[in-house]
Structure formats: C-alpha cells, structure tokens
Image (cartoon, rainbow, N blue to C red; front, side):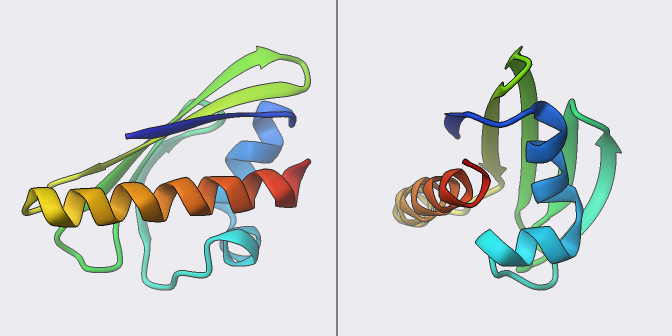
Length: 100
C-alpha cells in the first residue's frame, strides 16, 4: 500500500478517483471497474488486468487536508509488487500536483 496526505478536501480527492474524466487527468488508465464505493470513505476497484484489485481509503484530516491510501491486492509476486509500489508512488505524486 501507498499513502499520501494531500492539501485538498476529501470530496475533491474522492472525485479524483471516482469520476473517470478526473481520474484520466492524473492516472491515465482505462478499464478500471468500481465494484463498491462509499463516498468520501472507501472504494473497491478491479484493476485493468482483471486479476488484481484496489482498496482505496480516504481519511479527512482537516477541512482542506486528506489522507488517501491505495492498497493494490492479489499481486502475484514480489517483483510485480515492487513495480506497482513504484507506479503508485508516482501516480499519487501526480495526483497531488493535480489537486494542490
């Protein structure tokens, strides 16, 4: 899992994941399927490979600060996990630049 605290309200961070057009701005991945979502709290997403999943958690820290945690699960091996950790580090940093 990777987490970031962003200088943005929880609703803005949640929408950046939930709304496809906003997600395209910073993530640029197609084929994600949101299976379950609790607005401004959690999301469960099937990743584009249809084999792995995302659990995304949103925590309001202050009115204008939110922690987001992305946990990428069902990854087949340590090498792939390390690659995805690097991937999510870069993508969450890009999200930060988009929102802040």
